[in-house]
Image (cartoon, rainbow, N blue to C red; front, side, top):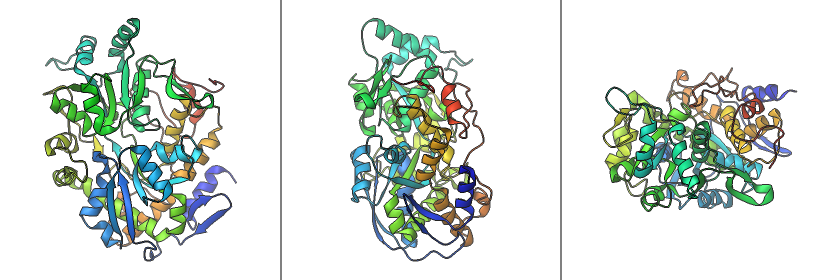
Length: 462
């Protein structure tokens, strides 16, 4: 049986819940009635970022309760603490970086089988530089008739600045939130597309700094600390989610130069992560929490974002994101401010439901794996099928389809709002909207890896 055939059968025959070695648990087809939750009291973790919104909305709008779930939501200190909490059972699930379940499942960093039945959002990040660096970049950037910079701004304009630092023997330090974060891969992608080497990892040699051969040195800074670290001069730029780019604008300490929407249009960002063991032990609970999150995501995007002001009010509470209403609203309501006063319409800066944002596509997982290989976190070549097999262990569209079909059957969300589950393969069509104009086809991960000018290719090993 081919990989593609097995995945198609997984989605169209009775669903398989919990892919584990030697064991599986068959549950009823998507249109069957979902039973009562096996576990009603749950604790979910999150990091103080606006893209945790589906969890907050599912709680505040009563969607969890309508599923018979009594949820406690708790902010976590950083991404490692959050992941460890899910693995050790202190947390039942969490708002996660898309790369975290993938990295844990392949054993990079922490070894644990984490899955996701729900993708939380598209886009939502940006790259910000200090005022001094921005002043050095501006002469290298084309201008519109009104004198404002032409967007998207590529890293070509940053390259002379980095070269100036390197020539003076001064490291060009930048911040990202975690080694397997979207932010790390997006920042690396942007830098490399502009001819700036962001460095390699060599975990097999004990080097997890990610700074081998680097022209720009990337290191971890927790999201809420990004603005203060920039202001202190410890870093000269960073990639982070909102509201921490807009916070730099409000404080007058930095300038966001490019959004991730401009680096990779409609890129997947966060996921909701649970252990494979949780999904096996609590199948009804898993489907019910996924139903609640889907409903929350839809509410966030309903009527052309008409609910976003209410969502911003929720997120501004100290128990959620805790930033000022105006700071969060600057991006959540469909605009984005670059240089102070240069506010532009970016209606898809935060997407929670449209464009099938909540569907966990295998091709999204494979993109992250290609970047792990590109920068050395995966030390040696893997076959195309290996990439697809890992994606199928972690991203679970079968669980999503069951939850979504039940919402359709309950007439809560129309079928037209979802992919056609009878034909959906889990792979997006080849994607062309990257800042370097390369094409990504999730069915051909090795060909994609080999297409980059900077980065490891097939046959390369550090």
